Image (cartoon, rainbow, N blue to C red; front, side, top):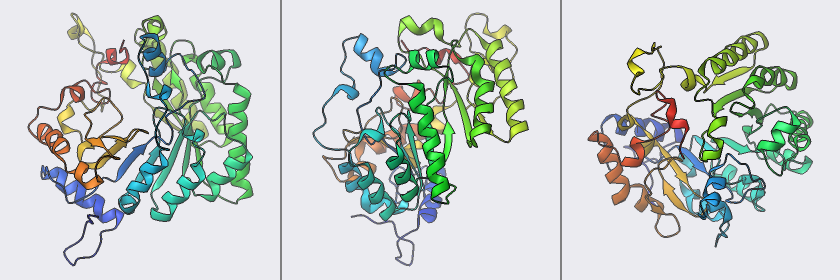
Length: 372
């Protein structure tokens, strides 16, 4: 195993590794001594729901095989076993991937493995409908810092139309079980975040999410516009409704200030700095902090995304793959030819083509929300 050492030969802490990583990014280093500290791994490829706005639904409609519909040769816990020696460098881990992480039958073992090797901030993203009393207690016992629940509506008919095979009652019960488990364990974690995706059918509910969060002592409401992958769903996009989106976001911001709920407004891309087009120059531009140059992305230096089948990438967007964790040792991937090439292209100001079309770095042009 390769270990990151300081000048005295002592293994670096997670904080020291992050500082070294940031220096190497600023110095345009291509081969790194540091390891990634921001990690995202899906704990399972399968999903218990069949949501119409999911990329998996678009792939099925086109006759493509999405990873949710594949049978993996190995349980994704094997990924974490391969990475256990490097967990000491992790500052942040998100169990978020193409499927529902709570489906993994070895989830408790996986969480214990992480906590045995790392004190990182641990976040799980879930649709929430599988959270029962045992699982809620497990999250407290394993010191999961945050549970982000994808709850798209507080109205039963809308929620169940969007989240196919789910019942709103089950998702709300999961939230209550987390709250009860925290109280029983005298713990302030896991924090609960709501991560609704908004479109025309539910955008007017946004202020109600703030009220609901305040009522349940939920930490954050993180609002994002839904990315559209199917032509039949284009009419649901907020792309052509900037004024309505702005009005709802402003109402939510006022309620958040009144109630103390943290509101993360990812909807600004709908109504700020609207994209180019033939008459784009006529539009009034407003100041926004959206990143626009993908060559400035730090992810090839700081981050890692691993699919449940072992494919390693710098991030969860359509970024280039470094290889497979089951076919090569991690250091050989982290500083391998593909990773070095991506970093070099970034330094040269010529990022790989998938990175040029990145959702993260094109938020000044809201048309990126439509990817059919």
